[in-house]
Length: 285
Ligand code: DGL
Image (cartoon, rainbow, N blue to C red; front, top):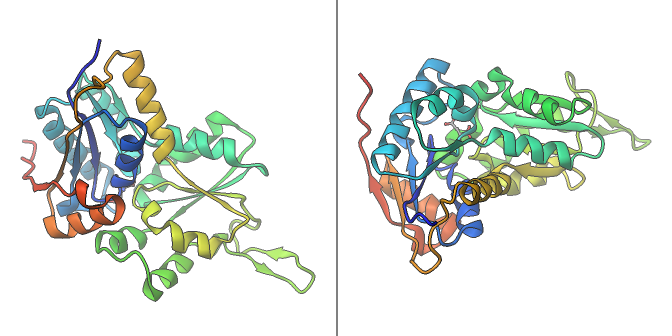
């Protein structure tokens, strides 16, 4: 059995496009509907109640478009709202926290993982829990970096302002070497992580400056490709894979500025992924 209906993906803004990119690579026959709630981004500095409400409103829109599965391509929404969202809809829904946590727990050799994310994600400790579930011996150092999402939403991905903001955001992970080559780290972390998990889907858009700041000896990973693998498995097990003879259709919806969304989409995908349409999300009563 096959199912030609699209997969729905949702994020507060352009960040989830980093997940969409991996989904399209991994599942080239699948059609997608991507919804970015750019008009109300960032979510990460909002209350849990707002994140839950906005997430449900966005998923209602995807459900109206008859998607066969949903990827919550937003760590904040996954951390705060995933169980409720799963209760609300009959379609299978996957988030990005478990796949990212598993990837991080498997990547670290020294069992020291740094997690950078939005304040709401860090407050939930969803990653701490998920990494500990995977391997309780991994030390997890969570750190909120609220200054990064506004940069990405504004299309600022390179340059000296971005480099400085990234260095400030990563300060607890950046050590200094003594004359004898010993690393000294600022409190509260006190030691070098060997893996840095980008636990916000916006952050892979800043992967270059982040890698430059943290150094080559730290593995920088994110949830995108692990999430695409989980999705592939989910579609296969549920006999929801699209037929391989049709041509996939990709629609991108934004509640924000279409031109700005398109510019970031073009950076990531090139011209063929610029079918961006404005959308108005009715607020739940
Ligand atoms: N991209 C989202 C995440 O993964 C949220 C960013 C935001 O809106 O604060 O957490």
